[in-house]
Amino acid sequence: MSNRQSAVVLSLVAALVAGTWGCAMRPESAPWDNHQRTIVAQPPAAMGHLTVETPEAGSPDNGEQPHERFFVYDQSGRYVDRFNNDVFLPIGLAPGKYSVVTRYACQNRKVQVEIREGCEAYIRLEDFKRAPAIE
Figure 1 (tube, rainbow, N blue to C red):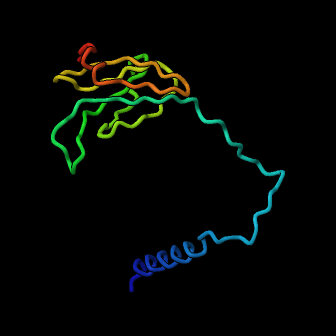
Figure 2: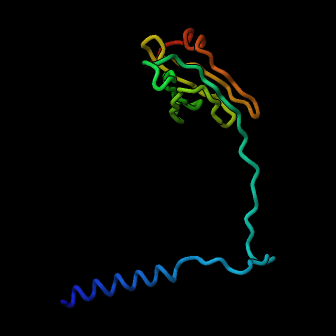
Figure 3: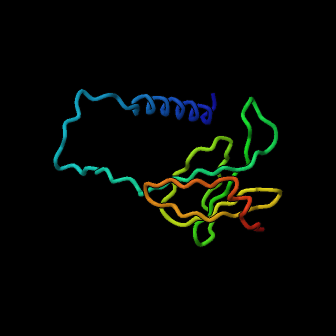
C-alpha cells in the first residue's frame, strides 16, 4: 500500500472513531442550573386567517378537483407567497392589508383583503369575478 493510500485509510478510520465517540449519549440526569442562560417562550405573532375560493383548474385527479393557485402580495405590492389551493384551507397571515391574485376567466384578477388579528377573512369566487384584471 502506498503512503497516499495509507493516509486515506488512516483518515477514514480516524473519522469513524471520532464519529462513534462523538455520538450523544443520554446522561443520567440534567439538573436545573439557575446560573445558566434560559430561553424564555415568546408569545406567538399576531395572526389572522384567510381562506380563498379559486376556480377549478383541469380535470379531477384521484377524485379531487384541482383549483387555481393564488398569490399573496403585501400592501406595498411585494410578493409574499404562492398557495396551491386544491382544498380550501385557511392560511395564517400577520394582520395587515394584502392583495390576492388568481386566474379567473383567463385573466389575473386581484382582490384586496384586510387581515385582522384573531379573525378569518374569506374570498369567494364571486369576488374574483367582480375584481379588476391585472397584468
